[in-house]
Image 1 (cartoon, one colour):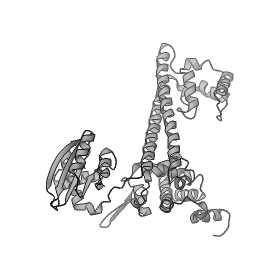
Image 2 (cartoon, one colour):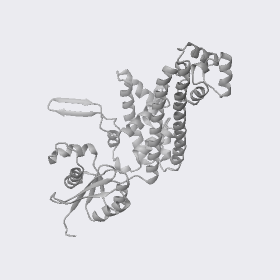
Image 3 (cartoon, helix red, strand yellow):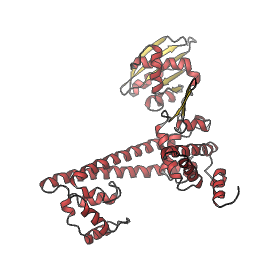
Image 4 (cartoon, helix red, strand yellow):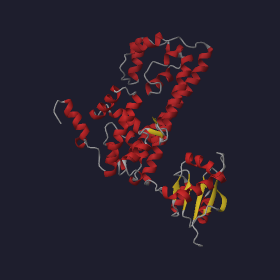
Amino acid sequence: MDGIRRYAGIDWAKARHAVCVVDERGSAVARFEVEHSDTGLRELVRVLDGVEGVAIERPDGPVVEALLGAGITVSVIASRQVKALRARHGLAGNKDDRADAYVLAEALRTDGHRLRPLRPDAPETVALRASVRARKDLVAHRTALAQQLGAHLALAFPGGVELFDELASPIARAFLRRFPTAERAAWLSPKRMTAWLAAQGYSGRRSGAELHARLAAAPPGVRGPSADALAAVTLALVAAVAAIDEQAKALGARIAEQLERHPDRAILTSLPRAGRVRAAALLAEIGDRRERFPTPESLACLAGVTPSTRQSGQHRAVSFRWTCDKKLREARGDFAQDSRRANPWAADLYRRARARGKSHPQAVRILARAWVYVIWRCWQDRVPYDPARHGALQRVILASTGVAA
C-alpha cells in the first residue's frame, strides 16, 4: 500500500453496481462496474480490500453481506441524503449511477466521522424481520383484494357485501362460495339460513333470522345470464383472498416460532396487549443492537413520535415528523393505540390528550412517545416490562382508588 487513504461508494442496482474510489484529496482514482453475481461480488471485495470504508444507500442485501463478510467497514447513507448532496457536486439533482457512487464516496471521505459504521442485527432478528414484513405485505394484499371483492359485489350481489362484519372472514368466504349470486341466495329462508350457519360453526352475534332479513333488504343485484359470469369473478376473488389468508396465517405461525426462540422475546411480549404479532413487529423494527439507540430520544425520532421543529429568525414552526422509519412508526402506533385498552396509565394519557383537544392520531402519537421511553428502558436493561415498577402506572391506579400517592 502507498499509505494514501481511499474511500469507496457503491450505487446499488439490480443487475450491475457502479463503484467509485476516491483518495484523501477527493480525486476519483477508480471507477468501474461489477455484475450482481457471485463472481462480481468476489471481484468487488478483492478490489476494495484496504479502503477506509464503503458508503452505500441500503443496509442489507448480498452486496452488504459480501463487504461485511470480508471485514470491510460499511456506512449507510440514506437515499434522500444522496439526493440532497448531488447539488453539492453540480449535478443539479440529476440521477446518474456513476455520479452517485462518487457522491457516496465523497460523503464518506468528508463526513465519515459523523457516520456510524453498519453493524447488522443478529441473524435471528434479520430472519424475524423478513417474516414480519412479508406477513404485513400479505395482509395488505388481502385487504386490497377484499376491497376489490366488495366493489364487485356492490354491483353483482349487494346482499353479500354487508352480510358479515368482514368480507375477508372465513364465514363470509364460505357464504360466497355457496351462494355467489343473488339468485342462489334467494333459496335461503330464515330457517335455512340458521341451519347453514350452524353447519359452518358460526358463533357470531347475529341470528340466522337477522342475517336473512339483512340479505332480503339489500338491492336485488344482477340476475339472469350475466349472473353466472359475474359469479365466476366472485369465486375467483374469494379464492384469491383465501389463498393469501392461508399464507398469512402460515407466516404468523412461523413468526410465533421465531419469536419464541429470540433472546429478546420476554421484553416485548411483556408489554400490554402486545401478543406475538405486535411484539414481533416491534422487535423486528427496533432490532437488537443497543448501541444504535444510545438514548430514548434517538429511538423516538426514528419512530416518528417527536415533532419536527423548524426555526428561522423569529419564525418557529412545529409540525408532524415525516422523516422517520415508516415501518417502525406503524409498529409503535399499532401497539400504542391498543395498549390503552389494557393499561390504565395508557388509557389516562390518551384520555387527557383528547381532553386537551388533540385528535385521535395526535393522542396516539403522544401515547406512543411515552411508551417509547418505557420500551427503550426495558430494552436497554434487557428486562421485561413490570407494571409494579412502572411508577406512573401505579400513581394512576392509586388515584383511581382514591388513595394518595
